[in-house]
Image (tube, rainbow, N blue to C red):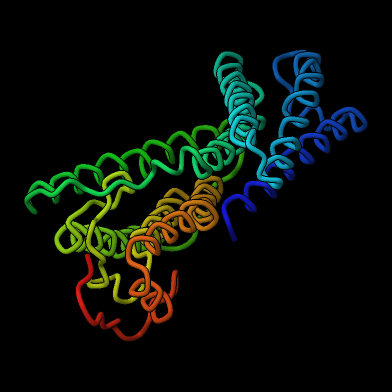
Length: 308
């Protein structure tokens, strides 16, 4: 599905969800206790006008201009991103100060991420997303690649899951457990991480670039894990998130990992594949016909010739 169509659906649903949420709060008073901020419910209810007039209406407007491919679509979407980011930041800071309203944080932060991702995934920002790596020696490329891995993995697999578990504890979501939980999760994490590390090595050594779009490989890579599945690093990253969720016994971290897979599927994968088709043409088309996006093949893909 094109990113623009996915963005249209998302912002339309976001606008409808906000309206439905306020209908719930206004017409079912008992629901307010779950989202209450501070001692008085008036703090929460005072947001009805800006939420409905700007955030809900703005989201629906963004969906419409995105659907019609209006020249103002980017402005409308970034307007919504600003609104959602401010609301999420305010909700989080209020929760930190008063230790209340944490359920609102759980809903606002994903909305902020999704809105921001779609804003980045549409022109003009997406036009500058893919940049060819500057020619360099293999050791320097490998150094850049594994520095990126250390930084990115530390953020998405350590810091963010830790923060999620803290929020989880605040709103009283119980952890799950099963026999040999940490051992199974640890083994699975090491196995799935090895795929990501090997894929990054192949991308740097053969492709002469890093896994990041802003420093991508100039050579087409269909060796190593890429000979069996088109997105081995994405598969590895999602598997790592699931492994962390299993290790922690955290329902919200599991949702976080699955949300990451959805973001990759509906936003970044279409953009990356469009860029690869433009750069490698028929060779990439043939590769896509033989190698699946998510499910590994039993046999290795055989590339006929090296492509630059």
